[in-house]
Length: 338
Image (cartoon, rainbow, N blue to C red; front, side, top):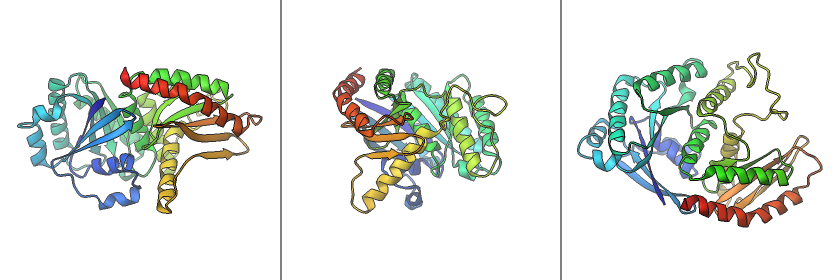
C-alpha cells in the first residue's frame, strides 16, 4: 500500500535535511553536506511493513515551482495523501513564499481534495525572538493564508526533538486503524502494570501509537516550542493549570515531549552503534524512579514499556513482550490492509 507525500517549500528551507535526518538516519551535523534538490526527488520509504511512503521532495527554486504549478500540476498534485509545506522561520521572502503556498494549496484542492496539509515553521533554532511567541505569530499568519483549508502547524528544528514530534503526527494519520493498536497497547500496559507503553517504527523510530491519548496538534507543537524555549534559557510555564502547577492527572510528572525525545536519543544511539560496526538490539534501564525496557515487538516495530512499580522485574516485561508478538503481528497486518 503506497501513500504519496509531497514535501514542498522554498529552496533552502530545510526540506532535504529533515528528510535525511528522519529517513536516512543521518545526524544533524552531516546535513550541511547536502546539496539543493533539483526538480523532484522521489523516494519510496518502506515505513511499516507493507506501508510504503512515496515521498516526493520537490525542489523549491522559482523555476521548479512555476513548473509544478503549470505543466506538471496534474502529475505533482494527483493522488496525494499528505502535503507538507516548509517555511523558514526567518525568511526574507515570506510574501513570495505565501504566494507559492496558496497556489499549491489551490492545486492540491483541485486534484487531491482529501489530502491532509501540514505546515512546518522550520529552523526554529534561528528564531530571533521568543520561540513560543514567534511560532504563535507565524501560525496565525499561515492559517489566515490557508483560508478555509484545514491545516496543522508545527515549529521544528533539526537540533531538537520537535522534528520527530511533527513527523510522528504526520505519519500517524497515514496508518489505518492506529487507534486499534493504541487500545491493545493499553491492554499490554495493564498486563505489565506499566505506566505507559509506546510503539515505534523500527527504522525511523517515529511514534506509531501509545497506550495513552496523544496531545492535540496545537498542544503538541506548543509543548515542543516551550521545550525549545527552555533549552535556550527562556522562562516557560509548567504544563498543567493556569497557575503554572502541573496537573494531578499525571502523578509521575512525565515530560510532554517524552516520545519525540526518546526517538531522537535512540536514533543518535543507533548511529553511534553503527559507527563502531555494532547493531542496536534492545535496551534495559533500571533507575531509582522507574524501569524501562525497549525491545523488538514485531519485525517492523519496537516497543518501549515504562514502569514505576519497583516490584516489576524486567524479565517479566520481556516475557510479556514475547507473548504479545503474535497478536501485534496480526494487528499490524490488519491495520495495513484496512
